[in-house]
Amino acid sequence: MTDTSLRANFLSFTGRAKILHTTWFAFFVTFLVWFSHAPLLVAIQESMGLSDQQIKTLLILNVALTIPARIITGMLVDVYGPRKTYTAMLVSTAGLCFFFATATSFEVLALARFLMGFVGAGFVIGIRMISEWYPARQLGLAEGIYKGMGNVGSAVAALSLPTIAVMFGGDDGWRYATALTGVIALIYSGIYYTSVRDTPVGSTYFKPNKSGGLEVTSKRDFFFYLAMNVPMYGALAVLTWKVAGLGLLSDLAANIIYGVLVAIYTFQASQIYKVNREIFHKPVEKVLQYKFKQVAILSIAYAVTFGSELAVVSMLPLFFKDTFLIPISLAGMFGACFAITDVLSCPSGGFISDKFGRKTSLVVLLCGASIGFFGMSQITGDWPIAMAVAVMMVSSFFLGAAAGCVFAVVPLIKRRLTGQIAGMVGAYGNIGAVLFLTVFSLVSPSVFFMTIAVGIAFAAAASMFLDEPSSTMAEIMPDGTVQLIEVH
Image (tube, rainbow, N blue to C red; front, side):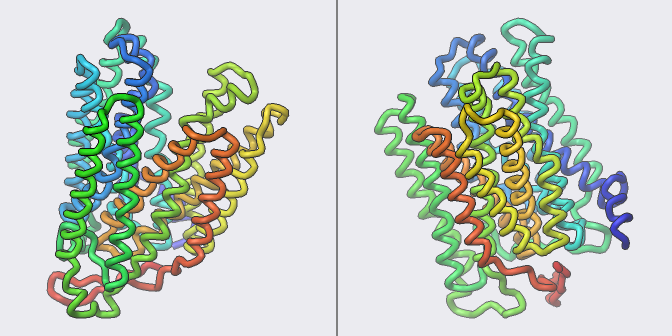
């Protein structure tokens, strides 16, 4: 198949292209709902008489549950398939949205925003769906289109929902605007369920041998996996500490949550051992092995790319306003440009990965992003604003392209575990956001940008140890035979 026909296929709405477009729109809808509250916070605050601290708490709670939710969602999609899982996610998204829109107290608002964090895990489902339909030579670009177009949901929420709230008018305008996104999710759940299938005709949907944790294939990887789970609970502990710091949790309540996190980690470790205990008695056949270091490296890379993107988007408007003394509306437009570049950068990163190799592309793009953020750390009010915006846009492009590269590799590690691997890598994106936002609350913007630059440089160094995917990966068919899946 020629490159021309490959490009044309992405623009059609038949076959695998139909799966791609219906799936990225499902991701788009979940992000539309997940970020529906952010542009309406002023209206919500005025309508319900909330304090600034309570508004900050809502923002923190919105991302708290996403870390474990991405792990859980990854397990569900591997077992039940993306069609059923995404449909259930969209129905749940609608229900949580209506719950939030009808809240009459801060406590109910807070609970709704906390539960809404689960919606942010919808992204993981499509990674497995796209990998089932696209061959390896096109997979990076397809996953990049999925990620880039889906992320636009947050930008559309910011641009449209305030206007919709004003159209409805009154103190309840924000309720109708957010509820409308829930209606969209509910309608689209039916459309998605009837429009897609998990695999092309004749293909096998490989499922994990056991549920309860990610299967690994060596003793060393087992302990590596346990260690990589620790930062997830650390991030949740940091979020607890931040909420307690706002005076909305007593010391006793915070300590109870810390204890619960330790207990959950212990329980999870026991489940992981149950899933993997056989590797301590009998080695896994070489043809069926994979290296967990691939998952760990990609998790670190996504922590610094998506994590820094989430953190930077939240602070850029004020940074431009304070640095260049410009109107907040103009500063907001500059800040929005950082996120909107995802539409081009994620597919570009996937395409570069398809064309020039997974490892080399990721290392080069991470290096570019690190240099870009070093440049951003040097921005002062003496710079021409056009130059500052140009440096920001270049940094954003390299950052998004590197994130696109990450998910060009994720589906090529172990097919039956793709959802769980995507869940872990995706969770690390939120861990990175928690880390960078915590740093931002403690230091100046220039030090914040420099910290991101150093973090990305570390990820680039780690990515040098990534193994280029081999020509095939092996999975066991239901009849016990081994099938080799082309991944190169």
